[in-house]
Image (cartoon, rainbow, N blue to C red; front, top):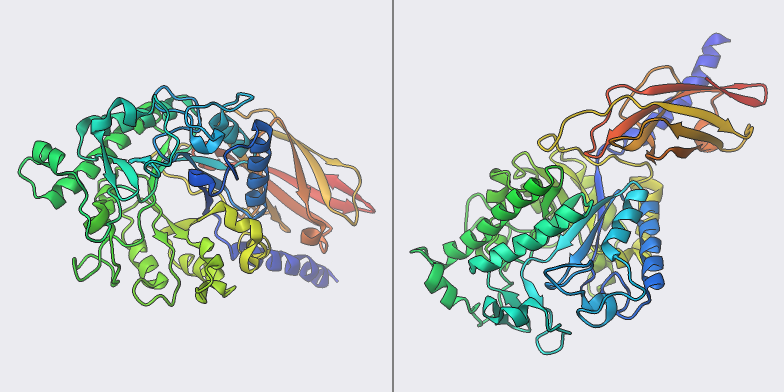
Length: 511
């Protein structure tokens, strides 16, 4: 009889362990929220303040349901601002007119950070470094816009107007803008995308000959352009860490650094343009020199792409992180491309997630972009919720930023109500939240803490609710849960609080 009882208890535990351990304990899961041209948020230029807030909350809740633990929001799409700034005017995509504040007034960045952190998610502030006028002659431009104050800093290229990356005053101005945000806001990271020097327009040379003549210092133009981008990345890295040593600095480059026909260190690809040769962004140098904390290459291609296949590129990036974190950018927006058969395949995204999990050097995913998930293409929301992101993941810590562990959590727990055949609801109260971002809950059918099976993550508050699903413990009449603390820098406490729930008659007793 004792052996039979043991098997009843142990088998559900093994099954539960299998489902949990199939997902990594640490995984960055994020979504890009593009504000330029109202791609993702706000949905249009002229929304009221209340409508903007409602939309953003709905957006956050959707991504939280899908298992995301971070959001990357574009707060400076075109030398403008989604926050009050001494340097740049309010964005036209926020109010319809550049320089016009929201009415009724509020600070969108502060609001977004608060709502994001309330859900236990990280907020990464995404800035475009050099774009100044999105559509020349069509964009709303304020009289106080920097293009009006310093027209000599800018160069037209195609339909856009850009800062001249070779101008030293420009580099300092952009650095000042970033420093201001890091200083004033409780962001978790500064995030830049792939737009450094612009993507080439066939037959049209970028018009920076004047600044090259002034600042070239004997370099050829290609090396000089790369040195300009290197300079601002180094300046930004130093400035960010000086203002807030815990703030991360991440870059999301184009998916190909160089093709191997140009450089033996490059990937076995045939990309038409590359970071190094066309955008003048030497991402490997920044990783090697530890100027940035993570790289998120935009691998927006499918496995079957003949010139830039997904599997080839993820393998290459996994081997070129140089000790920094690597997240993979997924092009889920391509599910709506009418001619893309691969992205109509429901398995394309799940296969990409499974592939990246084969590499310990790759710590997660970022999805472009938020709006895509509103239509649940190929049922991918369901795939994430019910399978790949069914259980939460902790954001990978960065020990070079901080490796200090938080103190053991001090918590009180009590069962709410008297469930015997339904979910168990517990009230958790905290006596000490200082420096703690989250609490992590682990379940076990045996009295032994196993830290690789995350069950729930609770945002640190004075009063919290823990819901233990009946489906997860339906075969148990005795089990344990353990709670650890997570710091703002994603480090987990060494020690934990332990509780035991025992079914006695028709009552759950908490010890």
